[in-house]
Length: 393
Image 1: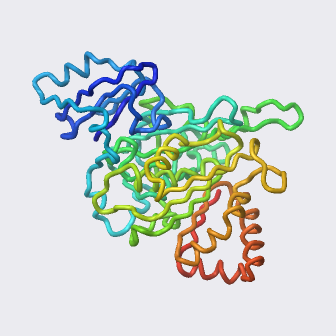
Image 2: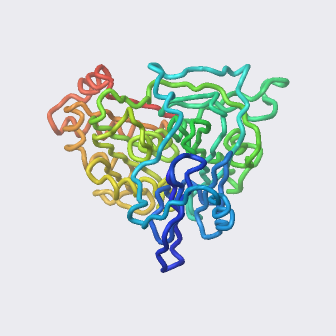
Image 3: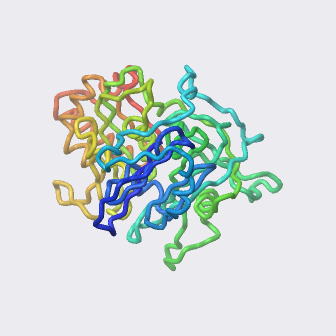
């Protein structure tokens, strides 16, 4: 699993050292090279899990790295030679199942996972806080891209004294191999739910989201109750590796699409070699609110023929009528192209807040009418052909 670590504080390009004892694949450290793991994955100085460790800054303890190579083969390569487009994943037996895993753990008998890391994803000017949470499930709660986990927060349900809280569903934001590529973790993208009193304008802690705040406040080592996995609507169809996938998300609705894109462009999956088009539309408030933007931007650089990425920043951009730019405005901007792709069999996905759909539906209906088509008939055909995928909350 080649993971490249970069620093922009040094102007010196050094040779890289690598060792192959842990993963049988060189793990490289480089200076002034683009990182093959985007910065949005891990922002802490050091991240460790089992026998693997990574660093995103120069704080890496080089003495430890060197000591691990003593008595083992050391491969010296140039930065250019070390560049690897995709990451090895395991166990590949996760590709063997013909049907997605469903409801392996029920609400009354959840699986106890462990928090690996909690990372704030958004910048200081973002309204609200969104976190990327990695959970160790030990390989015991496998899932497919596009599925959801149920989370049961600790404590007692105030509406049902003596009973646990109700389960909350979260779309999984990683591939079946997880962020550590070993099939033992799952990642969630969670926005902290808070309530502001409309009269005072102050936050009311008594009305905050129980589960989202529990997850965002978690620390590595904390336990978490998991149910599921669940969901078949948002599964990524892989029967045609050259298909077109149009993904439309608002906020944390980008979670399943992050999983799709990592599978398409980051991971070396022998049974799935993506050669089609993935087109992501992401709507958020402002630049500081963008989620996984480093990852998506890297795919755009590395796979310009297979990936398109359009952002709708409602507080920074204007639509063609001078109003705020929402994701439906971006869809309208490219409507002719989108409709042609749908006519040619493209899959279209929507994920995010329930309130996103009326505006999108209105836009699509208006565009269809301008093209002399009946949107109701077109939508019926898209559903019949299983090209239409919606998961809103």
